[in-house]
Length: 219
Image (cartoon, rainbow, N blue to C red):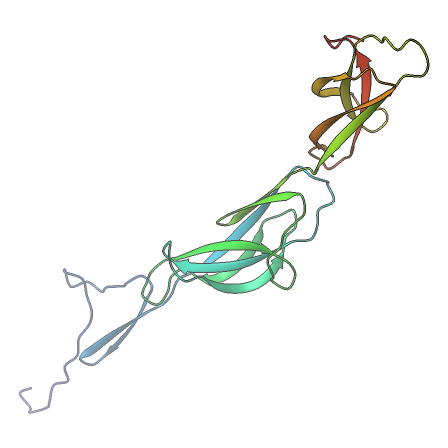
């Protein structure tokens, strides 16, 4: 200055109009003639849900393991704790929204056991769709064989058919299933229906039984 005192020069980071500039997700250090902007990774919470379709109401214990990746073909990495799944969505808090370069993470879950190993549930088809896992009950199938016996009487016997029914429980509503089956007129003959559901969609066992009918299904 006019008194010979040295000036100290320094800069401030501003917008085009000279107003103070605040950049989202950056920490600013203005030190003399240098400004350092350090990226602060934003945080987010992640929720994942489980959907059961059919099967018994007493569900097996299952757990979610959380993963993340960059882009569709990025390398997946596991993050956070393994969480037990109940009736409510499970939640991880305070996770990175992006990597240090500001690229968004894609989060997804896998259904696992308590130790984090892949889990296969008998009689369930699994769909892992991002942050939702859907387990759809698929009943076992069985073959049903019914037998006709003739005791005494003429050997020239009338034509008979079997009509198959099923119900849940002794007092359940009966429903007919499968095709009519013609039964041979020998002293003993059997007919079989293949690949029928062992249970209903709730995992309750069917009781199968037959009725003897004519070729139109009438008793």
